[in-house]
Image 1 (cartoon, rainbow, N blue to C red):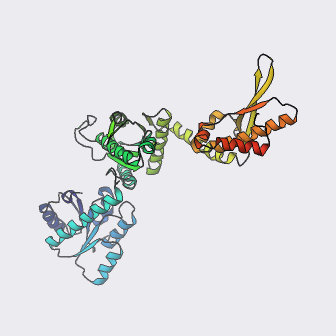
Image 2: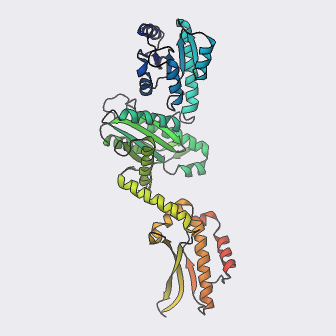
Length: 440
């Protein structure tokens, strides 16, 4: 943070004092100073401007500085703003009270200009360092999830007062996990740095997408964790502007990324949601952008998708099915049907294939195409495969006891079961539990 470019907000019921401080600070190089002589409007202005530091008088009509300080410290979006109290009250009790309420520093009136400049400089320098550690990602220097949520809240509040759109782009790097696992975290981190730089370039005024040629200061990019990024784009007139940026992001990531001796190729999936069309609050808008991201991945990745009301219904249905699927095994809701294998020359049944079905308590019989992929995504497929193996072996034993000795049984196995390296052990266990001859 450049100290001269820091925003300073002074709250004092004496307009003359505000102008004196303004003149001094501007001479000292502070370019963004604002003063409020109507204390009742102070909290609204603080929430709107979110200044870097507040200079606060204590004794004011309507609402005191004590009350303003208390409200600022209770607000999650404002509580970390430094507050330098400036008052003519110099008694120990007043100082103790403002410090208990969370004041950053204390200056007695009449304020010495040199002391004010020194306290302000130190306060802002400390804030810059603290903000860097608290609100920014150490790897990419982008805002982190915490700062992003704060920025989104502020953008949505401003958006309520206008007829514009506030778009949110949730971006995930395709196949990043494989790069990390194959080449190591050092290469993965190097790639993320380049990705962050390229994505950020798509939000700069130098980009041809900008109609004005100036950077839109309301737009921002954040790394919210791992290989996930969020782009915030308030002040849009139509959603097509978000599409242009999404396409540009996909385009810039299509070019190879060189990290050390490695030439890496990657792509991105992007989900787009916009307020107030898709949501009007922070949490719902983020959920909807994430839902759209899932659709982009399902479409084959390296693309973008918009959120829609029908998509929300699909996601709710999927979530319900996921919750029910977790309980299905314990509730014994799966059923194994057997499809005969027939020798066409002799017209004899020579085997049978076990096919799983889900007998849902309210939706009836659900075919595997609707839940097998879901079970794989949820990590339940191996447990389900074990159940199928044991049930199939049990049925083969029952057939042999009934005199059907030449009917072998087969089942379908998910690739995940092979990748776990547990298939042989699980087959052996099913054979031992049921007593089935392995030749079957």
